[in-house]
Length: 617
Image 1: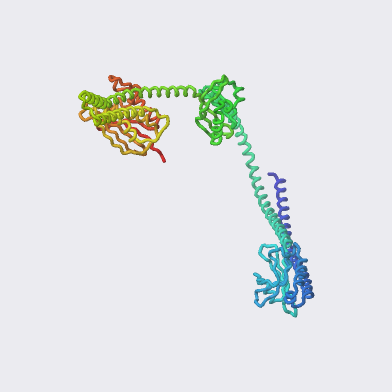
Image 2: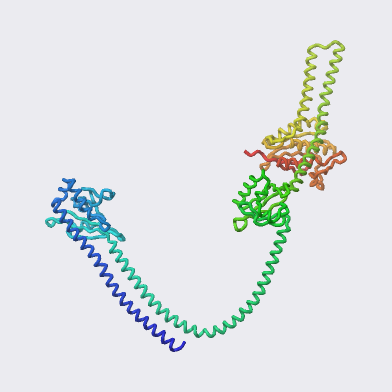
């Protein structure tokens, strides 16, 4: 820093100090003027009101007389004239003018006249009691001198009290509420100027201090400037080297992004699922190659279509309603519908839709499930065929049971018939005997007919679910199967502790129970034990309705327990076992009836367990 620069700073600082001194002098002069102007403006206002009060005082005494209350009380017209006169003075500057006199009590006055119009709710009526909350009123009575006071600390209104004297006695007080807004405004302006002067002086002081401070900093800065410039040159060279290195890194990163984009496009266009981006009107905004193949449309043709327009006509409304729900929720999965491609073929599809980050478009993933549904339908058809095959096998077993049940009634009918024939040859047939014999034959025929009805009902297909209990189904089965089981010297034990109802296909469940009974019977006959036993037990466990069919045939070997529910797996091949019984039983319970069929071994033998859901009320 040279000498001329130092000289300039010193001169500038000297001028600043002079200006600061002059500012302090002006500020002090302004403070004195502010006090004078504030007091003078209020005094002028009070002088004006005092003069107006004297005029009103003279008018009231001249018009009413010295006995104000008595004369006003005697004349309503005079009251109205005085109020009108007082009202003539009311302006935006004078809010109210009213006259009161003192009652016998010291702090209680009565109203003689109120200059406000009647439409004001605050208007005081003649002879109305008035209790001021300011001691100034009593002071006026005592001193007989006018007095002024503010109505509130921060308000814009002040009250002037003027005593009306007669023979050196206060006969009434004239009250004038006048605005001091102009005075307040003057005070605010003066205070504002005061604040501005104060701020200016503080700014001057701070400026001088800052100037000295920055002068010192500037001197120090000049010293460091040269050193910094040398260091900066070195840093610039480093930055150039870094920039060259950064350019190389950017080029490498751009190449990586391009490769990633190519990978993404390859994956996007080679995935088997059709992927597209749609808007909230289901218009296609972007799609991969699989979508063009699915719809058999070109890129241009697809972008002129929408997911709604591609949907077959009878599915349009349902599909659109579900997609609108997906737009509201931000996602929807597994919306099954059908497209009509450009060659007129129905394509069964499943949509998954998820909102994109922009919130106005959605990612639509569409899978062609035509083959999947066809295979599912074929599987269902095969299961129906297997079910029918299993049913036919059970029907043969049931016919064998019925034949066993019919053997005894038919023998009884034959014996009764022979007995009647012999009696007839011997001429010993009478009416009583004929009736008894006919009744017996009729009873046996009804039993045979009931057996046929039970057989027909057992294999009747249930198209709808119905409410039923395990006990009802077991009783229906045992009416047909008990005789055969007992005939083979197998003990049948029932422990039925569950009478809660389930809603299911009763006929199919009965087929499963009968199949489990027949398997237990075959297992017991195969090992030929001395006390073969089958136990039917029902109970409730963890909210499930459970039926267990168990035997004492020793159980299922661990090596094959996991295979017994597989199709065509049988342990009775030498006895023409099909291997479909347990497979179809599991299909019926778990897929048709929404239950569970499982097996385990206890210490006596195998236990097949059916678990079903109860009816929830």
